Image (cartoon, rainbow, N blue to C red; front, side, top):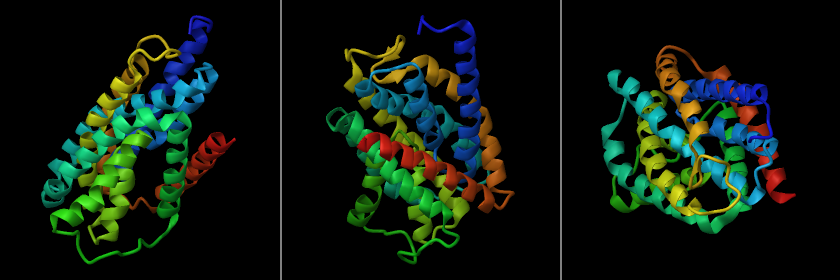
Length: 275
């Protein structure tokens, strides 16, 4: 870091602030979690600053998870004021989402950098296709009520989201809408899942990265503290704006634009993992 000029570092800070602003809006608007934007941007940053490959992806995911905690709280509060959160789904799925995220955070140590990149690229590509489809597929007429069925649906959401460094909305919103949950309710409820996922998963990445060589200065395990602070210092203020837009706009065009962005990022990540 000391090899770069003040101007370059200032430009990086401005870029991270802008990324945080965009991620906050999307977290509130689409329930996809700010991490789905933050991770591709941070991957580019690690390449610019020549962070070792074996450290870069875990550091990106851990830092992204740290930003999701305050962003999810801000988004969830805004949705709760509008009475949009489904507390029945939250109570039934929440413990399993939390457990999945905890397992994902611990598993990150054994999956490795290329594995994390492959997971992100594969799931992000599927999510981009889902966002681009105008009509959501239907799996059932209502969310499952049995304990085993709820666990089977929600544990993988927490596990995969933790490995990707994203909030639960990226996976939870499509799943809930396929179970006939209204989109606004799904987005609002997923904002709480973001907190349930990011907190345990972040501590897993901190634990996994303690003492690892090659990390940038001011890293706590696999969380780069200055980058996380810059990102969420803006996202906490823009997330309520996204929540407001979610209840007042038709987001189809934004969904399509975001699907294209996500698809390109996913292909790039897959190419990086397989090359």
